[in-house]
Image (cartoon, rainbow, N blue to C red; front, side, top):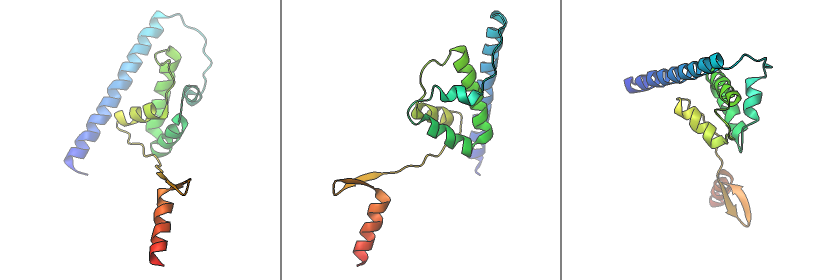
Length: 137
């Protein structure tokens, strides 16, 4: 890993730590000003899944499989933001992917390119493999 890469990783880790600190400070000030109430400790992942939109679950599952520890922390923080009402909109896959990447987690997604051939959509890899077979004959 080059020196620039290691410096970038340090900056990303520092930024993530700052974000977590800011969130916890906001929550501490809110909890001090609000009366304590009994909350059922729901699974943070379940509360996040409820607000995920188009392809959100796909991005979340990829992030969890590629970065299990980091994804767990982010899921917990997102769940807290949802509970406090700071996030009150649906998070689609694009927004969630952008969030993960903004904190330095380059979540890889499976990409598939389809092309139209004879009135049907076929994957580009299938079309190219068929073309190469036809060229060989």
